[in-house]
Image (cartoon, rainbow, N blue to C red; front, side):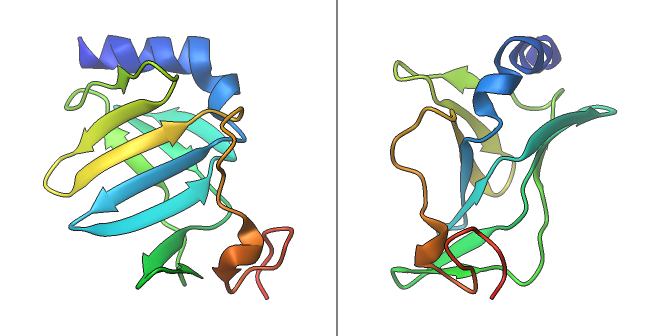
Length: 122
């Protein structure tokens, strides 16, 4: 059933989440990135981003590598909350949240050490 839920998300919600953000909390560390595209590759769904930021002691820093957030659609089912976010578990790591492009509290690239206001590497 989880793969069907992801395919429905991709078909019905993809455009609403491109331009939004992803946030993952993995082993207590918070990562955040803008969603530039969403792709299905085999059994996985990928949330692509031009950059990923990590919060270190209250300060956002650009990650030196850009590994996309992804999940195996057969293993994890997405859940939508009452305000339109989608959450899902990251097996053995933590939890991820997808924020739609209408979400008002996006991470400002100028607050991320290593990026300028346009979200480009400095």
